[in-house]
Length: 460
Image 1 (tube, rainbow, N blue to C red):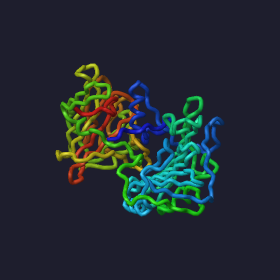
Image 2 (image 1 turned 30 degrees about the horizontal axis):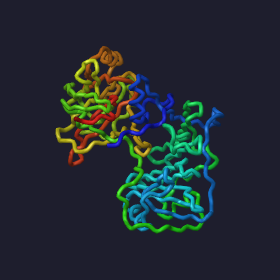
Image 3 (image 1 turned 90 degrees about the vertical axis):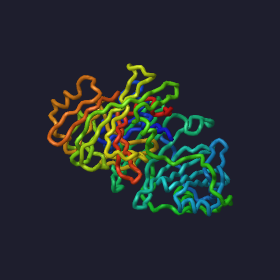
Image 4 (image 1 turned 60 degrees about the vertical axis):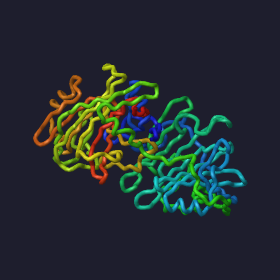
């Protein structure tokens, strides 16, 4: 399965309720003892507060003749299309949601590459420099209403003519368009990698787009032959012929949020994982009693920040009382290297046939970039599980008492609900996976504490 991709480093100042983290970022920060900080999501509507922010050139429109090569993708080293295909194959791929790409040439030189995969709701227009490197990507998402909306713009400044494509950990500039569930734009998050080696993050409203011209933000899905115009190439178009077959492989994959990875094994007594550096992690299970969920709506949050605004998971189980288990991993059977890896709420005993990322009420999955997830922020290295109706049912003194010491878990009860407190291993954010049975019904909630090493370890 794919490993999570690195994301930009957030600036603190955001509400602890709605942080987005990349799995690798969080793991790498926490592994060296740092506290992950949240990306600011408040709009900055005035002029930039810095005058040293880098820019990436925006390509000028052209009405020169355009040649289109439909293909599997672009090879920046060879400066050539990969696995050409015919226009009819590209149209069939577009209609079925399959993957395809096109290279747009003017004067025989590649100037743009378009990647499309509607089954992943993704399309991106890449602009190519004179060295054959993609330096600016304009990414779109296809929403459930069928409209295509701007997701983000990324740009790279290359120091030298022979600097490799996408050199460095992050784009030089990233502008992410934040939307609500109706697709209305809330703000534009901006992230810059500074030439000094530092990082700067801020945000603006849509009317203060950081470039001279804003890309189109809301449009009907372009026809297969409509992408040149969207890329600013309005000249007459010719299409190079290609084979009438779908390529066997593609040199790119569409982005996707963080995917589940060995969740069943992580919650299985005695399961063993081998890390990339050869260490063996062994899973142990500890029953942690039961939790009553009178509404079926589970809140997963830092116990120090429980209040009436705590958002429950969007998918609810039937009201009831459910078993809770805590899972730890121990490195090479050495007690001093034991971490809490997961906490499971078993809704039914039906075997899990699929796992998916749990969203909270108000989360919009189309906001997530490659390898990202909606994190449940943790400031005290501790997680609380409670029914939505019980988020304000417990005295602060009782919660504080449950958070003291180093127990594997503690449960406190009030009326018709319970609060289960599980210490983790670090601050930052945890995430929740939903396990579904063969008929699609909810079977498990699993809180993933994102233990270092497990992100890339393999069972066995």
